[in-house]
Image (cartoon, rainbow, N blue to C red; front, side, top):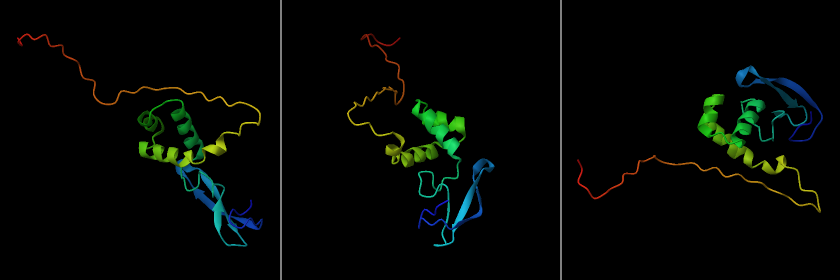
Length: 132
């Protein structure tokens, strides 16, 4: 694996980093510049201790319309963490969608979701009569 800092091929394995759920991430050491790195270095997943499969599943159900609180109950992750993942990964959005071929049209579809915010108050009709 090439060093992301100096692009050297002179690298060796240098231990494993444990992630949540007992998954391990291989660490590498560059013999030229002396820096340590792993497969996630300089990617959108860098410094996340959660497995990429979990983050991907969470963002997938969020994109299907599941709310943040419902997602955090389903995946046992904090709603604040889920929001951080979304904000972090939105910066890399151009890498996810392929460019439109030249000479073709781009069609974007949207869907609206209407959510009531606040209390549901019952409306009382007043007739002008005194209360009983």
